Length: 238
Length: 305
Ligand SMILES: Nc1ncnc2c1ncn2[C@@H]1O[C@H](COP(=O)(O)OP(=O)(O)OP(=O)(O)O)[C@@H](O)[C@H]1O
Ligand SMILES: [Mg+2]
Image (tube, rainbow over all chains, first blue to last red; front, side, top):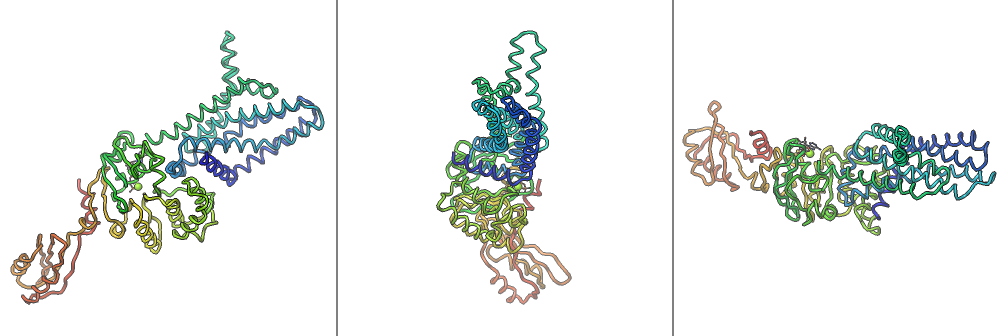
């Protein structure tokens, strides 16, 4: 546990040493500010929240690969993985702390948008429960994106490759729900809908709490983190 | 402290390390030699649990490097060959991070950091960004990192590469000092370094151990070279009578002969040789001793097919 904390702090520090973090933050703030000004401020009712969440959802699809691309790829490329894995720490600790740091970075990134929501509270009467639920859901979904990004970062030492592959996987995951439309049977449609990100995202942004959506996110996160640990370990037996 | 039994590490079908066995005793400094690609780094990576052996086993401080790898790793200070770092971090920050990972108790941490930076002479750059350091400083930082948790075992992969001559000397002294209460394995291509530092030498070639012996045993064969004039038959006959002579050979240059006397043990017979020369009134213009250097040894082993 202590090791995870030490490692997470180091990962966060490294985020903020690199210009990339500031580029991401600035881009995100500019985009979301513009978005808010353009669309949400004019509406100022309960549906505005949905727009905010929708915006964050799409943005996280693009930003998650950038947040995770360097996490393992860079350690492999620069050889620091050797120093890391010869210290008395486990692969699981390394992977989990990298994951936590990416999630914390993402949460910190979207925090300013809460200000917009607070503004909404002053103007209109949005449902506080829906807001919290929507944000939680989005963080869960982004958590899935980040775990996929971390996983991709574990089998390449090239950040650009990592970012592209992750983005492609996320896009496929986003649209695969619609692939069910090619089938006549309802249960095929349901399966594809459940697999894809979109249905769950749709539920979250409407502020609907359903444990099935959360279960979906958690199991994917655990699955990809597990694979990542396995891949980092596999270097030993190669 | 370190036991290696029949260790093999294959990459695909190629065995980088092939059935290597050796032991390193407590407080020994062992030099790991071998041509490029011999398998030194690979062996060290197995000892530090970065790679797992394909077959065979290795134990460090009594802990198997596969089954008990965390315990083994706690007791090792490792300086990897390429000395990788996070270039964005600062020297002190980096060492502090590593100290925490290696469970240096919080109370001792600050003192330990200062001590280690002092010892490895990186104190003057403690607030610099690692990416801006020169190669030599990075090398020293790597060494500082390796000893931060005061491990009983040090595994150093080419510790003096990239250092200037003064730093090489200081680093060797540091390693020697550390070797007084630690077990050290170091690899190097600088053979005099081994002669200076190590008690024992392992020469590894194509993944196999070619020679493993104490330095004293390896380099004890001595030679005496004379440039002498006189009746060459008398000379060789007389010298052959002396104790501990293995072989005598000579080449002729005009009236002078270059006589090489190979000795079979460490006994110093220079005085007796000199007396024989004086007694027989041979002319002499050069008298020197030569030892088989580690370098000759190394070349002989690694170039034979
Ligand atoms: N990850 C790897 N994948 C495939 N082959 C490898 C790998 N690492 C090392 N090798 C091969 O294993 C052999 C031994 O390499 P190693 O790095 O152990 O040599 P070395 O003795 O340290 O050499 P040097 O003096 O150049 O540092 C080499 O032939 C090398 O090409
Ligand atoms: Mg090497």
